Length: 592
Image 1 (cartoon, rainbow, N blue to C red):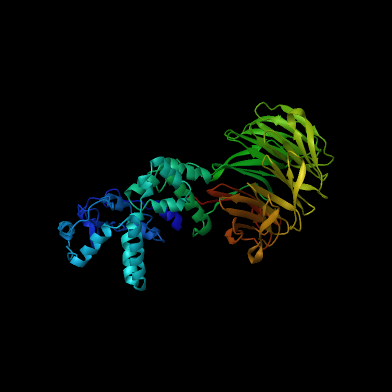
Image 2 (cartoon, helix red, strand yellow):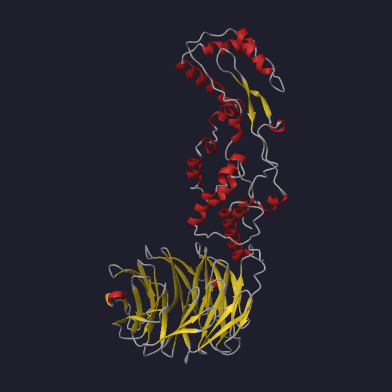
């Protein structure tokens, strides 16, 4: 477990946390005496209690001792103020001596009374004006400058007056506003400072904000941290950090769930929602696999040709086939609810948004359908060759075709608003985030377009072959290419940040890429699935390595969630059975 996640688990034991009134933590410093006005109100500086002893669990999981953030208990002692005014009569040495002796009687270890010379010097100092006191103090420090021990003693006497527990002193709303700018591991470390900080740093809204900024969902299921962490959002963050650790370092790798089916045919499309896996094949069928049961729940039979594309909602599956139809299936019963006719050639791609699905075909048209009613809504004509990829965000339909162009459509008006020209060969892949269109082509180029202006913003060069898959997260683009490399780009600047290559790169074409958490997962024709660091581009490890990896084994498709990896594997020469492999990285959920 990482030190960051370890800090999250560390929290003061409510039953054994040091009390501010317990005698065993009040250690008076008899040498740190201070004086005030002529009334002689003196006190001893109380030293903060030492750090509590770690529990056995915390000592095992904590790798970095958190530094003390503040002297929170300093505010528990008397608020000592130096009230000095030149208008006050100078006290006599006997009065000062009496004051010191009074305070000495309160100390567990009385000190030697001040000498008459020191008391006389103090009386002179009290009679000075503010300017004279400042000059006298400077002269005293300068006199001690040659003695390191004396300077250090002065420093130790002054420092406590500038230590303020701002988290405790500020209104709770302001304290939380300050803490929200800290990374989660620093908030967790700060919570171990004292009981007051622990209460503030465990605020539900504070951790909810941390999770929302990291796009970490609330984890409602019973987890291994339920008895350790009360805050449900902090618990969700701890589960997320544990997942990151298992993806990168978990040993051994999770036991794979192997689902065999489709005989020796190729799995052409793959869907995964965390509960079910849907695989489509050129054997004309789709299969629905249960994660919990580890078996095939339904085999969807009805297409008269190979299934080339699919999409999935909570209750429906949409599939496109070489038989020129689109079918809508009930995911629970396996019943075909609608058959959508209209295309005159293979349905090659689908894009789903809500109840609307957009299909692209080798007949060079794009069609829009309602999957609930089974009705055709629009037909978009304009391409002069097969449509290979489509995207839809609810407003724009974007299509890429073998005619080397990308078209942007307003489907409700059945109007093409932009024709994006620039590629010199077939367009094979598209990603669209509502603002940017990114296209990959057989011309080895990746182009970034502005959807509103219809202009090319950047041309990303570096790949040497066909870009087979891409994923866009914010301004970070990950592309997998048939040249066996994966590249990470910044589409705002047009620069290549990392090339995932080297001695651990894929031995042949990259078939698919996906970003999960802070990692890049890539599959290849070499029969492997590899894990890379998204931020540094470093290779981490192989997640899947087929037995026939060096003799024809292929991983065709992958789908990931934060907690699991699903991949479709097989071979082109019958050296590997066609199968779906799943790795579950979630070790925090308690199964009922």
